[in-house]
Length: 334
Image 1 (cartoon, rainbow, N blue to C red):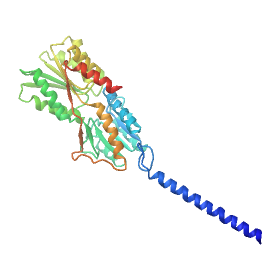
Image 2 (image 1 turned 90 degrees about the horizontal axis):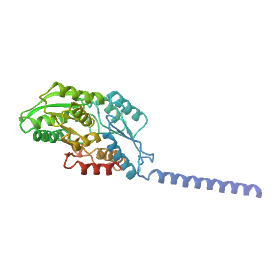
Image 3 (image 1 turned 60 degrees about the vertical axis):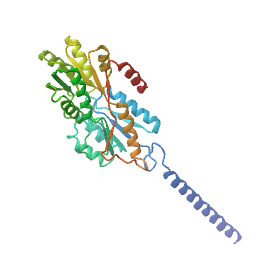
Image 4 (image 1 turned 180 degrees about the horizontal axis):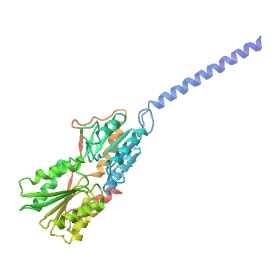
């Protein structure tokens, strides 16, 4: 009887110890799950964020540098995705894949904003979706980060008026006019040159085909001896315009006003082939898009501006300030 009593007492002690251990473990788990860490989604899992461009041009390397900067600061991973040939179908597939892979946030530069509303809305129903560079304002995206493209167009239009004080004829080149950024930039230019005796005689699309971007310019320059100025709306149009003007022997005869800061564009400004470029702030596109996606997934999400827009502004680059700008750009890319 004595032995049986001791056995019963020993069993009770073991059981009590087990219960106590389980309680401590449960308490430990509860404490860990309720602690929010940088770069973690609700529940403690690492954030999965993505930055989806509208093509694979050099321009986006600057934005990618901004993404990497925030990755270091925020201790998160942000995957940069670039549609190889810049088609809507490619971008849609990327977005759909990211959603199916459980990404917590996706930033998109919409190639065809109106046509992609369905895809963006479907993604927004399952994850945080914001836009940058090219907006889709009627979609369910939470926020747009980037240039006010209409105002940027007006800025470049003002520069064109200065270049053609007596008026003249100009042609416009872009990947596709269906993109919101292209349409808004062109509208800004048109409004700025209105009543200044400046006529837009042609508009050519290249569908992000670099060879076509150059041949479009060469075709117009050769077909229109009365042409005074050519204008590029997308980043790679600048280098294409510079190359076409040089090859056609029209440097100094046909002026050029473009957007963005690709190496070929800045070199064109140095040599005088391109008169002016209005640059955006792609580094900020990458940095701010990454930060907003991370913050929107935080325990206390930030308040989105009433107009759902974060305007990053523009800068005018001419021969007088191109060297200083290149130095600044090199520092941002480090």
